[in-house]
Image (cartoon, rainbow, N blue to C red; front, side, top):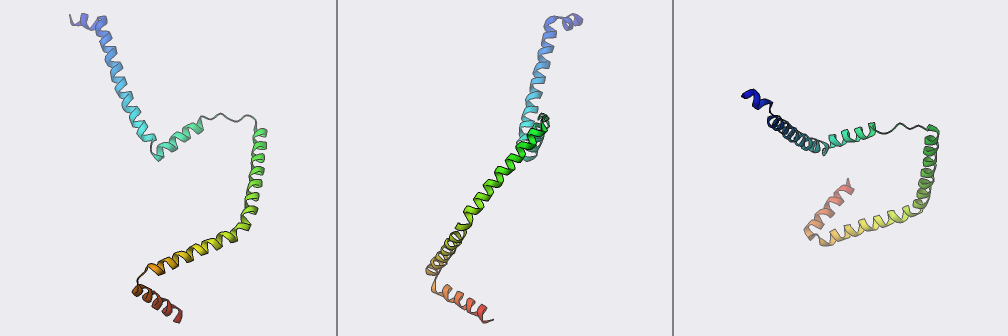
Length: 130
């Protein structure tokens, strides 16, 4: 009787469904684990490395070299333009920065107590006297 029940189609179907269910639960646990793993920095590195490994090998090296040379020339043109346009504004920037610092110093001076102001004047006087 046991042999008949084990060999019946219903028993085989139940066994197959149980295996599918077990496999499904294992797969979901693995998916959750890998999702958590890949959300870390190390996982991001692994993921990026896998993507990089799967990139196709470039076939036309001459076109790639020409493209890189063109990119470098464009980059140098842009950097030269930015440098030459920023140099005249450096003095204006530094002057404004000094004005800002002076305003902050004045604001702190006006808002501090007279005792604190006198103490800081004493400290500054002692520094310059040395």
